Length: 145
Image 1 (cartoon, rainbow, N blue to C red):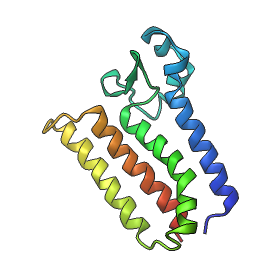
Image 2 (image 1 turned 90 degrees about the horizontal axis):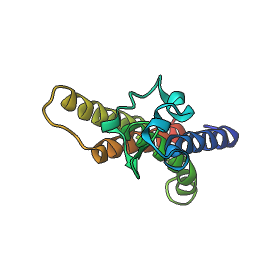
Image 3 (image 1 turned 45 degrees about the horizontal axis):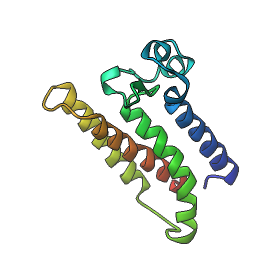
C-alpha cells in the first residue's frame, strides 16, 4: 500500500508538472518567446514538442505535445480525486494492472497507426489517449499491491 505522504508528494509534483506544461500560454506573447522558454527546455528530453502536435491557446503552444499534456493533466487530476473515490466508492480494485496495460496498448496503437500513416490523429485524440494513460497510471499507483 502506498503511504499518504508518498501520494501527497506525487499529487503535488504531478500538479506542478502540469502547471509548467501549460504555463507558456500565460507567460509568452509569441512563438519565438515560447521556442526559447525554460518551460520548453525543461521538457525537451522527454517530449518531441512538435508544434503541429501541440495544443495551442491564443497562438502559443503548451510546453509539451497533446499526448504528454493529457498524461500530466490526468495524473494530476487522478491524484486529487482518486483518493476520494477510493474512500467513498471503491475500496479495493483488483484490476489496476489490466487497466494500465490496456491503456498503454491503446496509446501504443494510436501512436503506431499514426507512425505507419494509416490515419492522422488529431491533437484531441492524442490528448484523450494520454489522459487515459495518466488516469490509469494513477489508479495503478494507488491500488497496486
